[in-house]
Length: 102
Ligand SMILES: [Zn+2]
Image 1 (cartoon, rainbow, N blue to C red):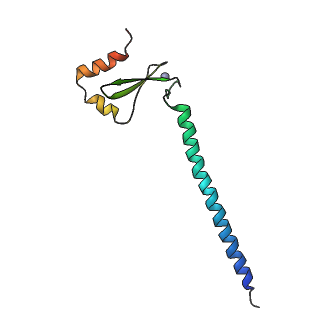
Image 2: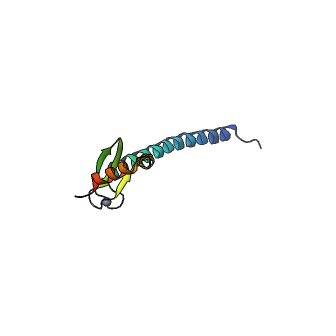
Image 3: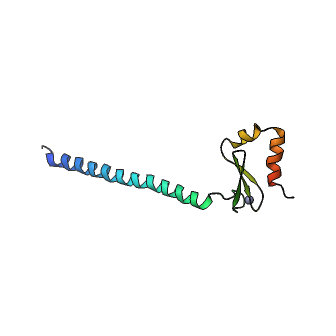
């Protein structure tokens, strides 16, 4: 008994349709990740990772140092620790004196 050719065709069409819908959903997931990243950035930007309070940014010789307004922790962006380490000892002392309470 020969198989109906339309059956294979239906299977092919169904698979194509599944692949098409899957692609759409995968695209949505990608956008979700981007949206979530954006939300997280809005929520956490310039806030202390330890206590959640706002950072105060200070610029010293082109190095932006962020200091927490609550727990006084200090945050350095990528590459800034290296920049700080290249300062003369007196430069480092000055940098920290900017932050220190009188
Ligand atoms: Zn803090």
